Length: 377
Image (cartoon, rainbow, N blue to C red):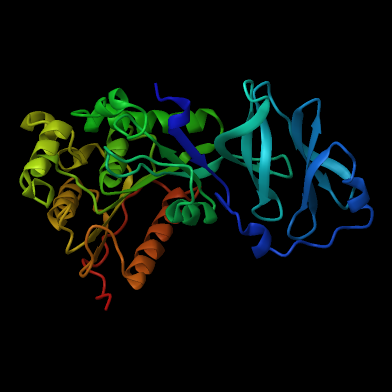
């Protein structure tokens, strides 16, 4: 089981938006609203950007409720009521019908509410609905973790309307040595299975549309995205791999990690030396199990995960009858740093995600794109 605090969930049209109030000019309050919200039980109130709704947090007997009031009818449109453990905290309007709200919990020792580290999208209409979701496993996988802070990729995906799920799977840093070491030698099953389990959790909780889920990741996250789609072929509509490692048998002798004694030791400890096990855990050797659409993005000068990984993955998918989308930047390495290269990449990725998660789109393989993008500079 994954500890609850290892799951990071961000949804709706914004994730963490400290400048949202300054960016969106609020509509003027209708007559009487200011007096209405001066009641002692109102903690905070904000009007939606177009002036359709008032969102107000009320507090009674130490418990909070987030209420949405239709300003035309002056009636309550919907409410987010607390359960025995949680309550709504700070919130921001993402658009005229949806807010992103931080969840708070009562700390018995402090006798005060504390952040639960969770953000949720709430519709003022009360209709809600499951969202298309992008699962974003972090790189590493060891010595790295996802944290509760602004992330530009999460923000970009969320601003496009996706729920975004981030998972601190076994092997991640920050949860103790035993938790991190539990990922050693288990990249292809235990670690990625945590990503799959977290995805199913999001479906069970009603956050994600089970028919509109994709995975995107960079470096190890790219590996995890494709491997998750192999372990759970019916769960993922598409997978995007950016600067990924797809053949674990090559890690001990290609790329810059084995250049040093420390690097070679890390590879032996992290993935082991059993070639049969490494092949079983490598997407390159299991391309025939993929049903998801795949987009591969890579830098030609990548020394951490050489381009050969992506080329071999593409060849395996073509041979399996599922040619992937393909984008290679000739002057980029392990990550894209040129602004125009990043723009080309994300334009392509967002279009690919939109095509793959369209409600009526079948999980068919995309036509293969030109092998290389124009030079960035």
